[in-house]
Structure formats: C-alpha cells, structure tokens
Length: 101
Image (cartoon, rainbow, N blue to C red; front, side, top):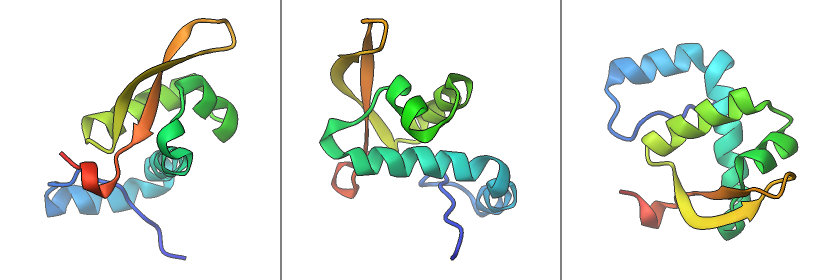
C-alpha cells in the first residue's frame, strides 16, 4: 500500500519531499484525522470526538487539526456539540473537492 501524504495544495516540491520523509512520524496522524473527518461527512466531529474515536490525545488532535485548518482541508462547520462536560465545542468538517478555497 502506498503512503498518502497530505501537504498544502500549493506546496513547493521541496516541501512535498520533506513531507514524504517525515510521513512516518507526522503525516500518518494528519492523514488519520483527515480521513476520519471525511468519513464523518456532514456530521463532522469535535476535537473530543476525534480524540475518543482515533485514540489520540488532545495534545495530538489540536495541533493536527490546526494544520489541516490552516491548509484548507477542514472547516469550522458553524455548528457546535456539547462535550462530555456539557460545554459547546466546534464541529469540524472535511472540505470536499467542490468546496476547495
């Protein structure tokens, strides 16, 4: 199975090469989060839902989600869902091809 590397849409070739080299460490987590959000479709997911379903810590989910947001792979859906403490949390969604910025 080929590794998939998610990099910024307009990344330079040198950035793509660097991303491929670091993939085993960071790219696999980024891809795991992104593919999870794709599977959630319009339902999306909160950070806590991603943590629980992907078995990753918040310290891993938050920065990973931020890079996906910065690179326009995900969006704030404008919706919230309560977390286990009853606090409202942003619902994140994957951007599909038709919604690319």
